[in-house]
Amino acid sequence: MRDLSIYIHIPFCVRKCLYCDFLSGLARGGEMESYVNLLLREIKKQAIFYGDHRVISIFLGGGTPSLLPAWETGRILERVREEFLLTEDAEITIECNPGTVTAEKLENYITYGINRLSIGLQSTDDGELARIGRIHDYGSFLETYRLAREAGFRNVNIDLMAGLPGQSLASYRKTLERVVALSPEHISAYSLILEEGTPLYVNQKEYTFPDEEEEREMYELTGRCLEKAGFHRYEISNYAREGRECRHNKVYWCRGDYAGFGLGASSMVRNVRWKNPDGQADYAACVEKMEADALNRVAGITETETDRTARMKKICPKGMDFAEMLRQTGRREVQILTTQEQMEEFMFLGLRLTEGVDLQDFQRYFGKTAEEVYGEQISSFEKQGLLKREGRRLRLTPRGVDVSNVVFSAFLL
Image 1 (cartoon, rainbow, N blue to C red):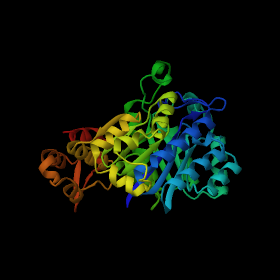
Image 2: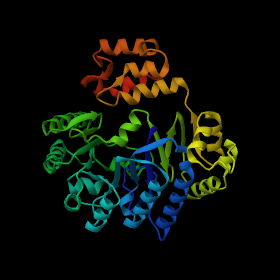
Image 3: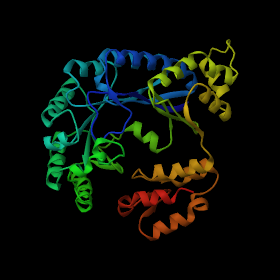
Image 4: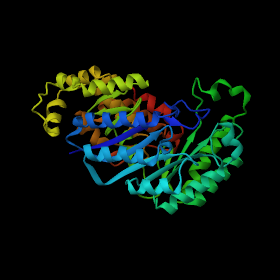
């Protein structure tokens, strides 16, 4: 069977952060229950695509998934288990913001089989948190972290950000030291990106940001501090204790199959990529079209073919039919990836991982060696000390990581 990862988008927030351009907004009235009902319908109908898959990870992201009442989260995971085959050790993650969970909710998560918690801290400096519009302070984060451990979570990620308005190297160092002292299993450390259209972008002149040199020092400090504390860097912005790498995110970087459910969620299966509509009304219409069996008519499936695996075998080998089926049910940006696009993604996504890409896998997948396709780029970056071969693997050097975007762009044919 093929491995599959599932992403479930929960678009609700208490308040949208000033830097956020994710598909999210305020929860109003009975919207959460109505949205979950749509999700359950989508999961049930779309599951016929995945009769020959087993689920190795589930990620509930957002937005703030922890805003959902616990029983709604339970309904979602129950539906996934009804419709999909999960491996016994499936990694099941939920994102949460400090202050949005209680001891009872966290205990319910454990009961539902959630075994990984990702907490959006960003900074331990209350002033920095306020300037980016976070709803919590450091104290509420500590309380959330304590409750998570007491509930039984043994795999916790903490999100951090560098380059925040008003942030200094000293304050960032303090954040790193405080977080390391808590001994989480995983730390994601990103640099702030000013996304066009966000309040922080529009009003950036009102803030003082670290300059380029300070951001560079923060970046280097992250690696030194976390390595000293026993974390290994397995991806450009992610650090983990041994054996605690995020299985779900590695699926994206290794170009595995993933199915997205919910508003704006993206999917890629067998080199066909698509996303759900961004608008609530369009998303509801998409689900209704699926239930009207438009996808079955396009694929030529008869009413008697009820076995999910039999349906999957009929759908999947026909990439063009599969893509047309997706379009007719209201999916957006449906794309059958060309061999060239697959090669590009294999390189620039795989090189994000510190282990790099497997050159033998490249040849097995594409029938050509990486040197035949990318010989000039590989040779040039090796001479510059940005790429290094180790056995069958090609990876970024520390210098290459520093200018990774330059390296990645060279692999776009």
